[in-house]
Amino acid sequence: MSTPAIETHSLTKQYGDFTAVSDLDLTVEQGEVFGFLGPNGSGKSTTIRTLLDQIRPSSGSARVLDMDSRADSLKIRAEIGYVPGDLALYPNLTGEQTLKYFARLRGGVDQSFVDSLAERLQADLSKKIKEYSTGNRQKIGLIQAFMHRPRLLILDEPNAGLDPLIQQEFHTMLREVRDEGRTVFLSSHTLSEVERVAGRVAIIRHGKLVAVERIDDLKTKAIRRLDLQFAAAVPTGLFDGVEGVREADIDDDRAHVAFDGPINPILHAAMEHELVDLHTRDADLEEIFLAYYRDAEDEATR
Amino acid sequence: MSTALLTRDVADRRIPVAAITIGLTILTIGALGAGSGLQSTMDDLTENMPEALSAFIPGDVPGGYVVGEVFNLIAPLVLVAYAVMTGASAIAGEEDRGTMSVLIAQPVSRRQVLTAKAVGLLSALLVPTIVFGAAAVLASSWFDIGLTAANVAATCAHLLTLALFFGALALAVGGLTGNSSVAAMVAGGVAAVAYMSDSLLPLADLDALAKISPWYYYSSSTPLTNGLDVVHVVVLLSLTAIATAVAFVAFERRDLKG
Image 1 (cartoon, helix red, strand yellow):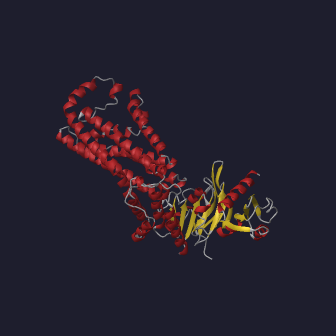
Image 2 (cartoon, helix red, strand yellow):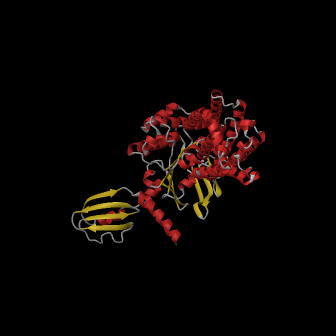
Image 3 (cartoon, one colour):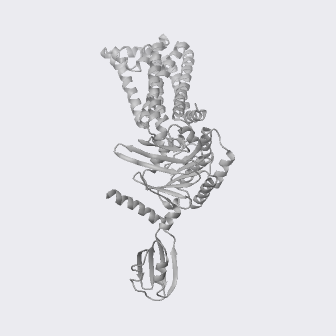
């Protein structure tokens, strides 16, 4: 098995009394798209900037592509592409000048690849940065991160201001990177932004790692919803005590059931009456994601 | 050093540097031209001024009041002010604007970034100083003021090292704090207080105390008459070196903002 793309050991960053990142142990394998999730201010950016040696850990350490995040930072940065959370670029440079500048700092990149990235993201490189919208500025940031085909992409909330079509193309680009065996570390404050591309996610809250889960596992744990239409009114207690039912809302001949686990017991209960139609809704990952936040909060207050 | 970083820095500063250079040149030629006619009148005027007032109007140079005004007031104030702004914005400016984060994510070390910024500062001061000196020599010969090229060059060397020091001081505060406003205020404040103390302390017979002011090493030896004072220039260069070293050490060690 190859060495991890990112590995942190008890990584901690304190600002006075405030602990931004606390004792973080995280492993991101090479060749995966890894989602790094947490609410704003949970320590995502602090962790990322520590990996890039922009800020120094109070204790603990990190290895990126099997190199020490502090001692080998220059070598690491040659191998990664990064989009910061609050991307700021030089207002008086055009998109093209900006990319040329960063390309020179990298010792040159393949211009035809830059052009193809710009085309895929529909980025207009001729205007000055100060004339761009947030989304168009973000595209320059993304091209800048992708253009040297880095082994590891570290993207801090990269979706800012991208319209849905471009976001789709961006996700395709991430999958391509993964399929080439390269790695993506993708931070976000909402699960929906990463669930379509990430294989695994870590959830961080108040600087602490709450969980690391496969997206597929999250989906099986997710609360699902079932809408049922009966031929006639059914008793309001129909789903009482049925295994897996979290909540049942019955209104005359209609029922809405929220459940986790297997669907069979619910169907058994329902089929005691004449069923006209039945409809399942997509697993709401956001809900389970929020549940993680809440659980962690309960633990913290306990 | 990264030439890409330096090229970018120089390109960013080309407009203000050109503006300062052209402005200073026009002002110098104009002032020396006007001053050649005014000289005797001004000499009479400053003769009768109380010492406290004439302390701010150095007339003790070839060409009298107007030339003194250009060399001891206008040129140093302009260059020191620009040096402070440039030094303050060099590192801390990138952090304030939030561009440091994406810049330093490229494979360039903090030392490389700071070196490029420091060399950029030097070049941003070198250009206007040289052109200013050349303009003064030319204007002096046109209007027959009697400045020698060697002494003007010596004065420009003093001027450049003075401005460099305050630029390096701003760079150091920016390197320590990552805040360009603080850097500009501290370095600008020190420059202003030092200027006042250099002008006023000798009046209170505190000449020895005035030596703590960097301005003392710019003008007290009157390089426009006496040529280069090597010791004074070395003092300014040493102060510049110390401030620059502080900038490098501080910037290397701390967490970056934005």
